[in-house]
Picture 1 (tube, rainbow, N blue to C red):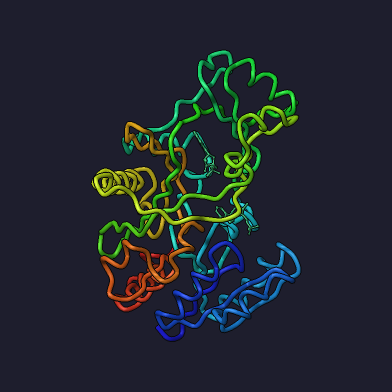
Picture 2 (picture 1 turned 30 degrees about the vertical axis):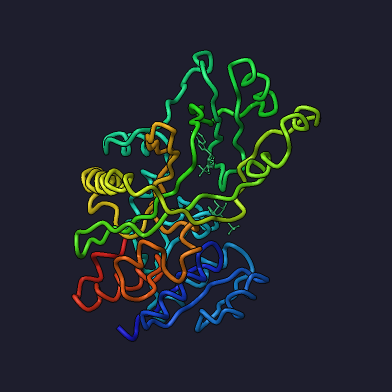
Length: 336
Ligand code: AMP
Ligand code: AMP
């Protein structure tokens, strides 16, 4: 095992991934855009930092990473910087099932998958004229919550769409009233077991600041539309009676993935949900990899504390899975 190294791109959850890998005994490599290296130096999580000038640089260092026997751990910034269509061709051994990316990045395929797994999802309005309730409109390629808008009815939607003239590629979803809750799972293809690692909610600008302005002032101000730009993550512990359903949801998503995209989804993944006052858990998206909402738990979450004797982050859980695969001579089972 000693010869394998864990590598990732410096952003998103890299601190956690690299720290977790070191805790499991791996040497680590951080590939960093020039100017972004400070945190990885300061927190001493990377044994080696490779600096690249631009996004193309990530492709240029592939041979070096392969020579170092690096295993790359993908995260949202990795996918965003490389581009989802180019990840498939990235030659460095990759933790996870790359084929699942097609299912996750296409909203129609994603919906088919989650629907077949029995998850409840927001209604979609294919034809805007059918809008009969508050909706949220999401443009294709919107990341990190930028490029969404909320409309209270059809008239409001038409008015707001004027700012997006020419845009064709968007989805109109029913706006679910409730609290957002991001569920962090880990499925081990080695043990066949699903683990619940934690929960978070996002801290989004400006929607999370609107409550700081009174309704009277909001109306008086010229124009405040909520935006959902992610700036951080906040831990949550959920009502315990919700847990049985939450486990079932994760299990069903994995089972369905094994049918549609063998060998299926494994490693960390996240269901992005809104929980309503009726305690319905409505899923609006899946992330088939580590999410940054696990970052508050570098020293373990209340849930991993129940299961593990040592502080277990999602990053460390990934490294442990790779370590187990190496020990059992099953590395090909966890690399995509
Ligand atoms: P960054 O590396 O911070 O510029 O982020 C690149 C992409 O990764 C963003 O467009 C987001 O899609 C995603 N991302 C980064 N940080 C987070 C976060 N805390 N929560 C959710 N998505 C994130
Ligand atoms: P996303 O970038 O897809 O994770 O979504 C960003 C934020 O938009 C979420 O954290 C929610 O606050 C909000 N959101 C997305 N979809 C819906 C929905 N159907 N109903 C209500 N809020 C939503």
